[in-house]
Length: 348
Image 1: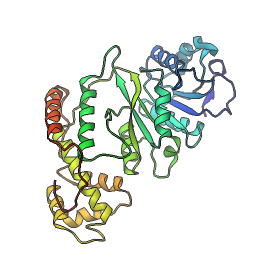
Image 2: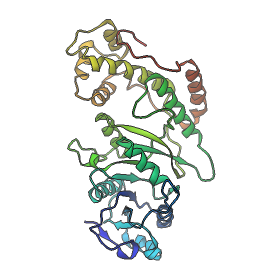
Image 3: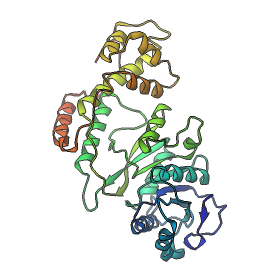
Image 4: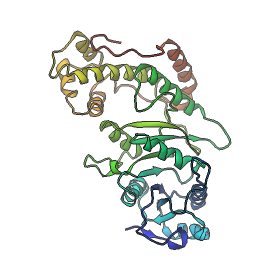
């Protein structure tokens, strides 16, 4: 069980249930964790006021020996205006899962659970923007990560271009345009109740991407929130080809219409349905079976995994990012400003 460090908390009552809890894997550099906790101590409300003591809590899961971490946290003393719980150590690949589970058990069932990196510095309104996004009806919200003393890096700008393309071709009512498109564990929040569902939404071996995939399979309402920022240096990752992204958007829009009308399952196949089955490299009967899932998110995940066309795209190395950004801007100029209602009988 997690144990409370009363000398580090705003109150020594373990029964206190905060309104929100931040889940943190401690990382390997205690000094960076201390900097992150100090940034959390400076969180403010929408009106610019300091948050009340004990308004939120933080769960820290060490990824190594506990003693150096306790020594680094000790100088903070009683100055932290939030509850801090230090859990027993966990392996690096399991620390986030453990922190999320403990945070969800501590906060109210529908309370927010937030995540960031120990090396990140949340901006003063990070917590408030996350809670506002969840209060507005989202199940989970994505924030932004920006490099210190700099604006959005090329990867972040590319994510924004892909989000803009999605808003043109397959808009999501739960994620209104404009959306920044970033999806990083450095700035993320969700409702605690999602982590306790029997479907099993806790991160598995895939970690954070596995959690997001599980949320999407359950048709979670995911939203990208502007202003929910942290400062963090993120390593450049592989680049998703923009043409593969566009192909998935068009297919998802068409298949959602088929799924909603039961075409290929309870309604007769149409020429448009068979045309999309050919484009996806699947027999029409197999596509109908895949669309039989009760939630479209689960049906779409099954189609993505089964289609040799959708699964064929491979991430590109980071050095291809400038070319992909130019291509994304070109596709945006060609995409319609306001996407028309999808017609199942017409292949895009």
